[in-house]
Length: 459
Ligand SMILES: Nc1nc2c(ncn2[C@@H]2O[C@H](COP(=O)(O)OP(=O)(O)OP(=O)(O)O)[C@@H](O)[C@H]2O)c(=O)[nH]1
Ligand SMILES: [Mg+2]
Image (cartoon, rainbow, N blue to C red; front, side, top):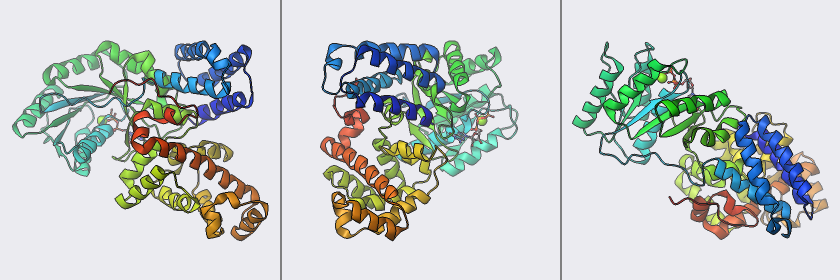
C-alpha cells in the first residue's frame, strides 16, 4: 500500500547517497521532493510540513553535513522522524488489564470492517492468548448483522451471545456483560451498528453503551481506502467520545498510505491494529518502525518472521531463524525460501517485507506480482552447480551465460537475482549480529547502515 510513496522516497535517498558532500541546498531540494511525494500519497498537509521541517532542522546540523556519508545520515534521520510521526517505535498493545470480563467496544462508520475485525480479535485472543472470548452483536440496524457475527464466532471457535430479537443495543450490551460474568468469560467483544455519518444519535448510543459496559478499549475501525476521510472520521470520533485505539482495515488495498501516516498526529490516538484481508487471520499489530522500514524500502523482516512463524510449520521456521542467526544464507536457502514464500500467500505483501524487493516490484511496474518470477528464480538457481549456490561470488560472466542458457533466462535476469540475493544476505548479516530478539526489540532502524537505536519508548 505504500508502494508509490516508497518508490519515490527511495529515489530521493538514492540520489542523496550518490553524492559525497551535501550542501544545505541539496537538503532543501531533497525535502521539496519528499514533500511532493508525501502530498501525492495523501498525507495531511500539517503532517507533511511538520515532517519536512523536522528532517531539515536535524539534517543541516554540522554532524550530518560533515559526516562521512551525509546521504546515509539524512536517510537515517528520515527513518527516525517517520517513526516518530507514526507514534514511536513499538506496537501499542490492546489493553486488557481490567477485571474480567474485559469489554472491548468496536465502533465506526458503516462498512468500515467492525464485525470482521471483532471476529479477528476474537480469534487472536482465543488462539494466541488462550482467553475465553464472548462475541456480542449490538447491531439492530441491519437484519443479518447478528447472524453474521454468530457465523464469524463459529469460524473462530469462540462463543457468541444468543440472539434475542427485539432488544435494544443497550439491553444486549447489558445481557452480554451479565453472561460474561456468569459464565466466566475473560473478554466480551461488543460489535456495534455502523452509521453512514457521524451524528449525534450515533455518539449518544456509543456513550450509553459505554456507561453500561465500562470497556477497557473503545476501538475505532476505519477503512484505509477512504484516505483523509478516515482521518477526519477518527478525529471527529475521538473529539466526541474518545477512543483508545484505531484499527485500520483494508491495508491490503491500493490506498496510498496517507491515512496511516497522518492518523497519529491529527487524532492523537494510536493505530493499534491493521487488517489486511477478509480472512480472520488477516490482523496485524501496528509497528511504526516496521512500517517506516517498508516505506523506506528497507523491508520488514521482523514482520516476515512473525508471519512465517504463523503460517509455516515449526521445523521450517526454526531452520530459517537459525540460518538468520548464523548469518549463513546461501542460494539454496534463497530457493527454499522462495518456495515457502509462495506458501505464505499474497506475494505482493510478502515482497514488501523483503529488503530490496520493493525495487523489484517497481521494475515490474507495480503490477500485481505474479508468482512466475519466483518460479523463474527457482529455475535459475537450479541451473547452478552446488559450488555456485554455496558461494555465489564465483559466478562471473561465463558462468552467468551458462546459467542463463540452462534455465532459459537472460544474463540480465541472473544478474538481477544475484543482486537481490546480495541485498538480502547483507541484511541477514546485520540481523545475525543483532539476533532475532534484538531485531524484534529494536525494529528496522537497527538495520540502518550507521546503526543507532530508534527513539525508543519504554514498553
Ligand atoms: N480486503 C479487506 N476487506 C475487509 C477487511 N476488513 C473487512 N473487510 C470486508 O469489508 C466488508 C465489510 O466488513 P464488515 O466487517 O461487515 O463491516 P462493518 O463495519 O461491520 O459493517 P456494518 O456493520 O454494515 O457497518 C466485508 O466484505 C469484509 O469482508 C480488510 O482488512 N481487507
Ligand atoms: Mg457490522
